[in-house]
Image (cartoon, rainbow, N blue to C red):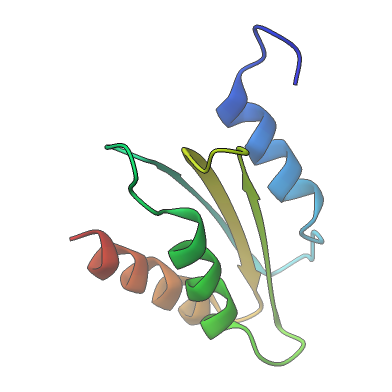
Length: 95
């Protein structure tokens, strides 16, 4: 990215570009930032998205900085409950 670019916004655009826009589906974007050196946020978020996948009615895209300090996950599903389950699992993982 060029100097001065809003990194969070660029990551959101990248994740959203990879998720198809389907009318009637629920879309949610999660942004996480590392709070201390060495904290892992990319791999756990990737595992969370993969665990939620299954079937043709759920998609997810992950975008991250090279150092893993900022990560954006976009998820979309036909059933809003699937998106909320991802949100709930993310809340439990962070708490």
